[in-house]
Length: 585
Image (tube, one colour):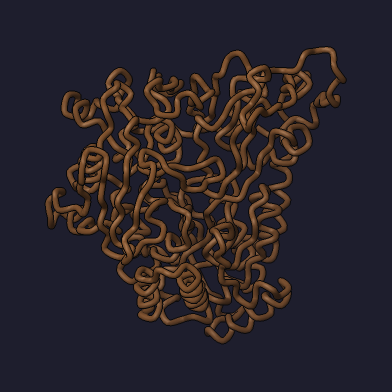
């Protein structure tokens, strides 16, 4: 745990912080000789009937993907985190899947019917679908797998994704056996799922790894080792060839996949890299075709020298700080909460701290979810000077002043970006309102426990990245008693609206109700919105066939690689780097 007291630097915290940040971005390293002129450029893409002309394809269709931290498991019902999910979407296919733009499309199920009351889904499986060992894929495989995912013995961290299914809550809690889950096979290729209530985003849930099928015979033969190389039988576009811990995970094309003839990448190699700077180095020397992310402090440098490869895309997530409304000074103190919301300058935070195109936010739900227009509070249209003036007025009304300043604690998980943001926010609160703030840094698991216990937290780092493309994913965590409600937020009117939203079948009416629920939440100010997320990575220009999407899900089977252009054409722009231009390490 680390504690920092910014009030030891009265009146100068923000200026010193920003100066230090800018200096850090200018650190010098060892200069390379050249940059992008050493990287071969792809040929011009030619399409025939919507597919790439074979003559422009690279001879070796092998994709090297940076993938962040090492996955703990490739058991789809026990895995958690984006690095695992990226691989699982290549190895397995759910009843539904995703197009390159993130749209939900048929997967193992080629079509479905939804009952009039929107509570019963009848899904018809592709009769040609098989497992990677040639066994037929059946409806019973999905019944078994969904029951396993919900079974408390599996200890799935994603089991809550199944809560819309009838009896899922009781199965997950152990009150009912898995056989009571509302899933059944009508015949070998027909599956029926019964829901508790209409769930407009349910088809999106069926593309989540927690709903993927597992091969029962392999599971029974190998037990927990069923998901290891040589044992894993999957139903997706790829099969697991090898897993070298802390080195690579290699997948190869599954010849039994129903769309194998449309899958161009023959092998995909995932490289675990926890240090974004190392990923950039691997990309520059051609060891990676794309990076999982890139370092914050190299943004300007990458923009200058790798602009065509630097891809920044909106992401369906929001970063914010939470208030513990069950602790002083926030109990029954809406004026103070709003003062703290108004006092921070989001433009400074995104332009000087995060620096990667994040969008300043005053709300909870990010843009980009279909036709949903997020609720925006009136003060979002004010100037920052107007927000500061109102923050000072509310702060005084809440009973604080320069003579009697508020003392607060911001708690956050160990991460350079979290540290910078917490320090910047604390500095702004000091400069604008005179608040004395202590920063408490905790290892991730300890931090999450602190949040969940709600005993010591006051202000804490928070945020949400949606598992499915629907605003309800953001709103549901603030329901009274929800296990994710670390804010101690409780509003009966908000809870009633959530219940009505869950029952509403008309999309336009449902959207209006969700906007009203978000507006109600923002009026109560249980959070300090900061920004909406973006993804940032380097993607080699030879890689084609994928699109940016707000879920940041990119299935390898949609991609392919172009061959390099013949040498001797126009020389690319001279991108020789001088020592003073080398990115910070």
